[in-house]
Length: 170
Image (cartoon, rainbow, N blue to C red; front, side, top):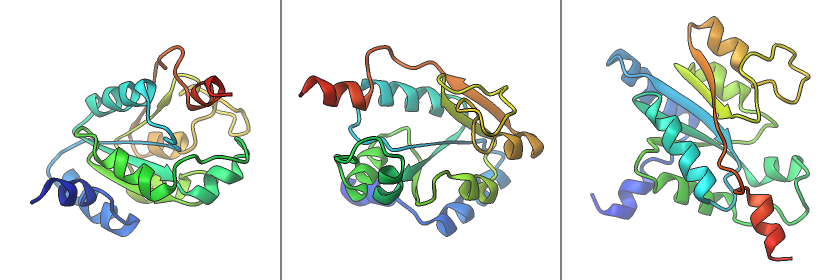
């Protein structure tokens, strides 16, 4: 398989992801799930995703659609890169096994359908937070824990965020 086709094959629909994950679980492979905008991929993102991949056998990244990024009101110019470009860049990382899109405010439906073994977010969240209205609450943590899964966080790399990178250009 040619390299670009290999990368593109990691970008799948939710239905395809469900089939693949079901097969992986039958093979006793643990599935790590994370999500985000990943607008301008930087050192912080790569470090975070590599560490997330180290937590299990397969890493699934749920990527916000352009519309769901805009709904977060980060800034009127966001996302900088359109979803098709962000999908391709994420899929090109060798430690990312699948990339899916989600269009809702949160990936709760994807988490409930895929039932990952491990749900991971950055350390600006709290895996012990139970109040779903708290900003530090990890969406899907209750569901993953109920299914016997693990919810954890990964330290962020100081000085690296898409917002800080964009602010340097102003």
